[in-house]
Each structure stands twice: as C-alpha cells, then as structure tokens.
Image (cartoon, rainbow, N blue to C red; front, side):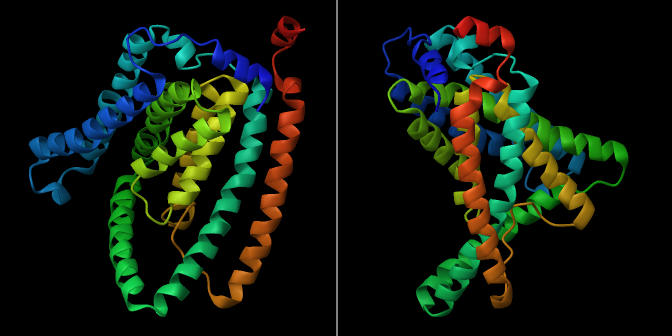
Length: 315
C-alpha cells in the first residue's frame, strides 16, 4: 500500500481517553455485535412478536434499515467522536476523484467472479470430503440447514412485486449497509487497528470480523476477501466513500442477479459437478493472476488516479 495512505493514517488523531486503539477496536466490535444481534432481536420480538414469519415484509425491511442506522452507524459515530474526537479523520471523510472510484470498481469486477469460482471449488471439495466421513457429513448437514435459513430470509427480503418495492429493496439492501457497515468497519474499526497493525494486517483483521458478522458459513472466506479489498481501497484512497461505493455496487449486483435470474446471490452455495469443476479451477487461476496484476499495477501507479490538486500538494 502506498506511502501517502500510510502517512495519512499515522497522522490521524490518537485516542483522547485512556484506552489503546486495539482496545477501542474490540470495544466497538463487541458493542455493535451485542447491539445489532441481541438488541435487534429484542426489538424484532417487541414489534412483531413470535409470529415473525407472517409479519409485513415492508415493515421488516424498514426495521432492518432502522436497525443498521441506530445500532451500527450511530454507535460508530459516537465511538469515533468520544474516543478520537476528530471524526473526519477517523472515518476518512474525503471526496475521492472519479478515477479513484472507477479503478477500484474495475478491481471489484475482477474479484466477484474470482470469488464465485472459489466458492464452486470450495463447496465441491467440501461435498467430496463430507461424503467419505460420517462426522463431517453431519456437520455439513447442520451448516446446510443454517445456509438454507439464511437464503430463505434473504430471498424474502429482496422479492419485489412492483418497481417502487424494488427501489425500497435497493435502498435497504444496498444503500444502507454500504453506508452503515463501511463507516463502522472501514472507518472506525480499520482506523483503530491501523494505529498498531500494518495496513494489510489491519485490513485483513477488520475483514475477518466483517465476515464473521454476516453469519454466512460457506461465504466466510469470500466475505473476508471482499472486506480485505474494501480495506485496501480505503487505505489507498484515504476515503470512506470508495469502499462505500464498492459495497453498494456488490450488493446492488446481487439484487440485480436475483431480479434477472432468481439466484440467491452472486456469491451462492452452488456445488459444481465434476465436469464443471475443471473450468472453475482454470477460471479461478486466471482471475487470481489478473487480480494480482491489478493490485501490483495500482500499488505502482496509484498517484495517477488522484486529483490534480492533491498531486501538486504532494510534490
């Protein structure tokens, strides 16, 4: 990652209370987890009761949106304010150039099919291993049940019966998570880890918790990879708006895939057949090489995508 991003991170304000940045990061992770998972569950029970399956789906969508804003975004802003004071620096509030956003979108376009092929390969291997071991097969069956539950919940959330309902789904599933989750993970958490850890490690650790928070057993590695790329984009651009744009685009494409093909997600749990797995492996290797070259190119040439006035400031 480039020196300009690293230097801007190191110059960020230190905590104003007696707490280490690492402790601040874990404090935020624990607080938001408790608030969003347990607080959100209690709020859902209070509003819908035990008959959640028959609740009005638009009411569920509005509650999901409110939960993200009140239980993820608001704590992120409050923690940034009362632990670090300078919210703007901690959250990387900087308007990036159009070229910066576009170049990272190109990387995302490479990364999405790369992760799709990885999932096909991963699930093919898991299926083969589980078939030869009774214990592993039992564990896999439990994971499959959780995966089906998550899939069912997700599908119910994004099924649209009108154009305006589709717009609401895009807002709830793509816009709000991109805003709230990025402010928390690539803003507050990443900046906190960045004080003590190297850029890649802090991006990876943040992405690990990002993946864990989504409770997607088969999609954990792709989610961590995606989150690490978002962290990389945040460091290189020193702008929260770049990972926000990537997060929105990723979720928006998943919604479009469902609308167009009825697939659960761009990152699905589909298992390839034996005849397909070879092509999946070839595609995966090719995309890994292409994505590696992309990252290498960005590391060497990133200043070409920055705003002209910023180049002049650096010279």
